[in-house]
Amino acid sequence: MKRAYVEIEEGQMHYRCAGSGEPIILLHMSGSSSDEFEQTGSLLAASHAVYAPDLLAFGGSDKPPRVYTLKEHAETVIEFMDCLGIKAAYFVGNLVGANIAVHVAMSSPERVKGLFLFSLCYSADYEEFKSYGSLPVYQPIPVSEDGSHLVEMWKRTQRYQETTDVISARTLCMHLAGEWSESLHFALFSDIDLTECLREIKAPVKLVGSPAEEEKLSRVAELMPNAEYEIVNDLNPFFDRKYPERFSQMVREFFDQ
Image (cartoon, rainbow, N blue to C red):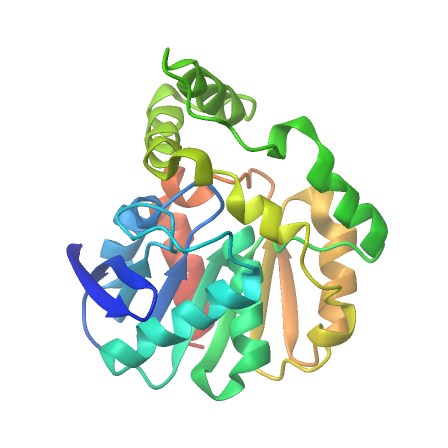
């Protein structure tokens, strides 16, 4: 994928792009960047115009003036679309990226042709959901002079028992974000209760999750008027990095049906 920048009101947004045709916008998970979609985006580019922005504070994008809410991140995505002349697109979101895609659909439904959401972060118990933000694994990681923050960044990915290559790539993304590396999690657990909002999303939606997420996905699919869901046995947060062929095939089959 090629790399480029656009200038929005808050600064520069770095992005990766490839291909031509109907546009797909890929939104990365917390602590990550468009690097997460390097292989997936290249595969999708065989049939679509693919854009993978670095959300503000991540990858090569500028840092925002403060920690943004998910709604504000969604607004920067819409600004990104405006800069590139993208009137409407299909959206793929991974974890917090999925929640940001939902916010785009809530605020600007005319810009969204469809949503493919991996492991949407949601709970019917809103108070319980907010309480997750106090867990140690989501706390900010101060940058230390001795570099010990890099060890903590490594450990937060290692807990998923991933390969060294995946852990290293994710740790590098977190390192680039620095003290902002957990800011999307802060925004996530400070977000609004999505329960009623999900009912307003009319675009076609595909929800994907692990077996442990089936109850949640079933609940969300009932709330959204035009949604379906699929359980993937070996799904984890880094599915797009590990299995780009499967990931891109699932996305393409849904958007091209």
